[in-house]
Image (cartoon, rainbow, N blue to C red):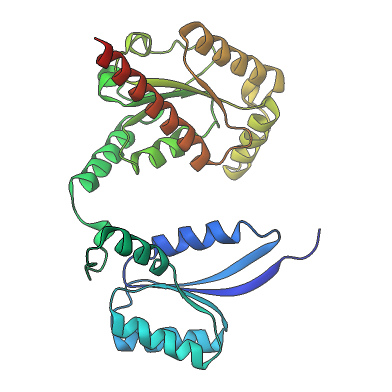
Length: 283
């Protein structure tokens, strides 16, 4: 494989910089063997802070991407980059112009408006608290409060998927599938939450478990069925059988990222709500 192509990427924001990082990484992912050396500058709101950014850009030329509400600051950054012949892009500007021409209403100049403390924000915080309390099978008695119940064997990314869903305002609890340990009965009788099973290939699970044990400096002896391929295959087969018997959807996470798994669960939730609305409409 060829050596990767590296370049400096300067991300300048008057807020947290999360939007810039998400957009830039999505764009770079379209190029094979290209990696960005990220320089992130959050909360840039003064001339002094812009001076620091420009010094860094001059020392490490590359591409500048920004989201700045203050027009004076953004124009200064753009002008200086142009003088240095450095590409400088306002990533939201094209979309803002489309919205403005379509809606025919003026924009607001409020920094960090997307992070306002509104009802949606507090819904996400509540969902995150719910996930933390209900991680790995904890407190299953109030399972009807969950939006999603994730079941799966160890190392199927149940916890990080639950946390990602919480950031979308979804209350998730996850239940581990452990050989010879019964699943809480409440999972089988739950009516409100969507129950989803996560599976992966036995090879993938064993690899992840081996890496986990290495990170914990665990000795090879005494690991039992945890990293035994046949035992792991039985755990996965049991999970598949359990989901089939209860008509719970299954998602194979062998080659999925956390984001892709969460997106699949959100799609299942959306389909379920749509089906429920159609049923209610027919009544």
